[in-house]
Image 1 (cartoon, rainbow over the protein chains, first blue to last red):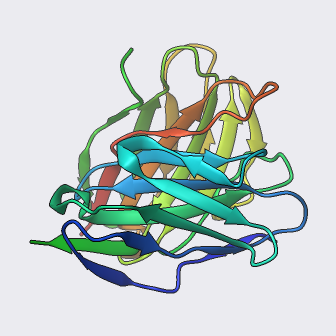
Image 2: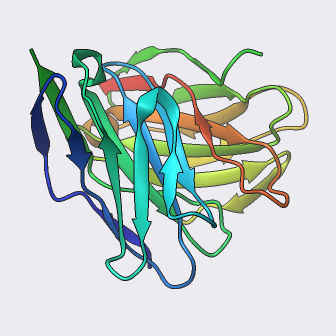
Length: 113
Length: 116
């Protein structure tokens, strides 16, 4: 069975500072990893994915994530946070080619002035 | 290209009634997925469908829930005899057929079901 852990319910960052939202996963086989963002009362928006290739993946809105196989992690990062980045972030994994995403419980990011 | 459409956006039902949730995938997408988000939780996979076929329904409750994706028209998630525990946000996602590159799923805005 595949699983995702987002150890932090909430992350607070000052605008202009770098941010990291943590994600670790557990799968048998090669993982496909994703980050999505959810704004209040909205659906999920795709940010980025890791399928294969370079461990550092760049995505939308200046976000990036680093795949670390030895630590089974896929942390989301951004060099300089914006207040508008405040939202709920979900990490997800898919393995085995079944197209079934398993999501973490989400991390609420709050960026303050 | 319109995104994934879901309607209604909000649905209120009394216990024992039926709820029908509709999802129109993005143009060119033949794969549809349904997820449920309970309050304060992440999304849980329910069912994966292609046109006229259920591919994986391992996340569907055994009773009262059903899904279809007919040859013509939207995908429907149907909940019979709703109970308060069915109150949640139901999200639909779609993707094109998986080919050489893995295609991510695009999500709709969700239907928020409230059972009184």
